[in-house]
Image 1: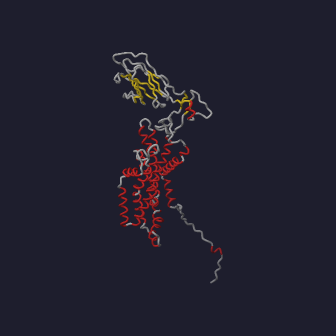
Image 2: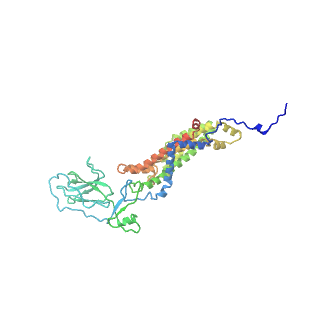
Image 3: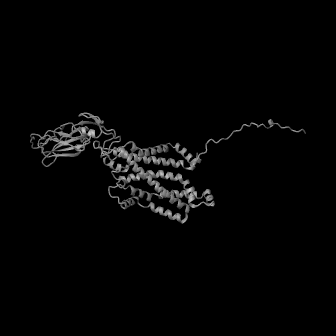
Length: 466
């Protein structure tokens, strides 16, 4: 048999076409995968942006809008958003002696209505001066003012003046005048003070005016500008209007957000931390200790929150009309941790049976190491979702307590206390209630939707189903 001679070309590789399998999905960590799934949830992502926007509104807002939330603009009381800010420069207020009739017609019985009312001078925010003709047989007059027409049901409004001299046929209104529309009604009265004639109504549109000194002191004109009588200026801008004391609503909402979100974030962080430690210890130790700890948690759940809120206010020396922020925080922390403890305990009972926990124990890992290094990190998903759901709950509790006068008290602004103030003027000035209530609703809804999204994104079982 001849010797075989092998050369390099005899060892050339043979090209074989095969279908190569490649990994189409990159390897992702638990948190990277959770973030990708969170981004696919449009509602949760929008809620996340809303929460971030609220934090920016709370922290950076007062740096941009530097109006003092306690400063009063007495020229704009309960001014709605977009109100007319024009003002006319006039002379300072001068007292008015009024108009007196030379004689009053005498009649045995007053018949008909009070004579037609008219303006003695243009109606301004300085004064509204009315005059009318004397009514036969009248011994006096009663003056009413309303924000609405009294025609439908004869509701004349607020009685602002009582005239006992029949010859006095004029009245000057100086009470809380604003640039709005008023309905003035005049009714004649007899010697017993009873109304003996039908009312007559005059619709008056009040014009905002300021004096030269007021325009300069309030900064309504430039530093080198000398205003003249009849000039038109613009009063201070309040984008969301003012409340019943003339305080800027936007500034108060910003500072109120600091109080509401401070309580809504700090309290959950503390009671969730207590619940984590408590539930971890109960779940890992187990046995009778676990039963005792859980029964104590059930006892805490049964404690009445409002009663303890009152007791803590008394213990901290918080009197009526004072803000009870610290008692509220303490009551929330002391009474709200059992729910988190139950959730964490359930997770720990499940995790401690895993194989890697047994392996760590065989290698000599101590109890605190197992809890802090293995168990609690594996419950972070549940913890984050719990915090997300706890924040709107606490914000709502703070708003409720401030609304009933047990939480944040005026003049300290919070969304709840602003709602309490706004409900008193809800019919005439609804913006004082709508804006804080709207922010509370948006915040609670955003955190709830974000919590739903985080729950789905952090659930490892959702990954296996995709």
